[in-house]
Length: 145
Image (cartoon, rainbow, N blue to C red):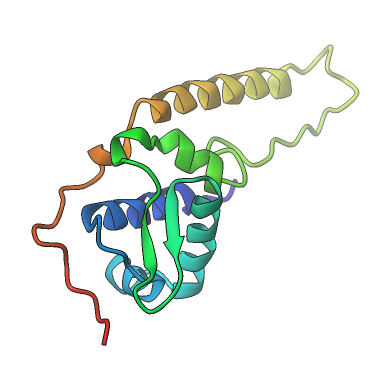
């Protein structure tokens, strides 16, 4: 099982953008502060823009900001936008395929991971973006010239 950091990384990006709202931030600025490669930030940001979590404005005064109030953005929204596989398990192999009447390991763990995933999604739905940050007052200065 490999460990994905997409949800956590996207949550850091979201919290930094939210903490600086309503200021618009460039992806380079976000990458610098969150210590993530700019290409990874752009990838995750594009998915959050498509999911109406972040809004992107073009032009010299453009950048990223929240698409809606932080209290209306849940971690389930972020999870659905960026996570490509379950956080619980990527793959469960069944070396006894065809002998399910004798070995129930695959069925037991498949049901367990499904239950854990459902419970985690319910918990994520109860956590909003405004719980992830304390706003900067005033917002951090960006490196705009």
